[in-house]
Length: 188
Picture 1 (cartoon, helix red, strand yellow):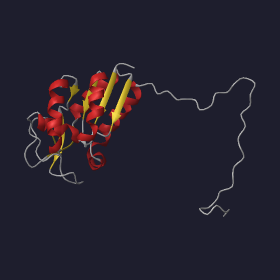
Picture 2 (cartoon, helix red, strand yellow):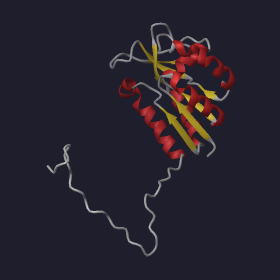
Picture 3 (tube, helix red, strand yellow):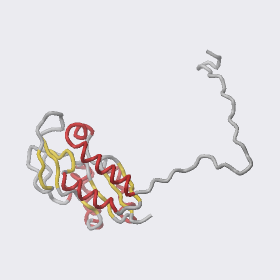
Picture 4 (spheres, rainbow, N blue to C red):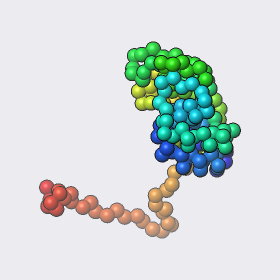
């Protein structure tokens, strides 16, 4: 259902390309976060510091950025540090100001607010991987990412499929439990 919002994160740009192209054609908005962003930014000529960039995927992202650049929503700011280890001080910078020697770890608070606004009106949300590394989620950004997940849950009506339909006048019976067998096929 539309409006459809697709969120792509993590790395492995090469593996995500076919599905990313597909969703760029059908999604109303595509939000990019995580390490996939840095490969796109490098392909578009922005400084990425020591952030994770898949150099072999750079030729793949350039034509996609040219063709679908208007439909992709890039982060406005990043949380950066010298490394993703816990306990290292972090700071927030605008997307085009990542200095040399620093790496992007996660989306910043402005981007989290922007993503939440885009999710508010969505009827369908497709989420492909996280927008941050596991270490950075644990150390400094967990509340922001929880806000995004909560908004996704609020904006989409989750439908549960019924496993069994009860027909009027019929009773459902359960099969008796079978005894457990070990690997050789005998009872323990």
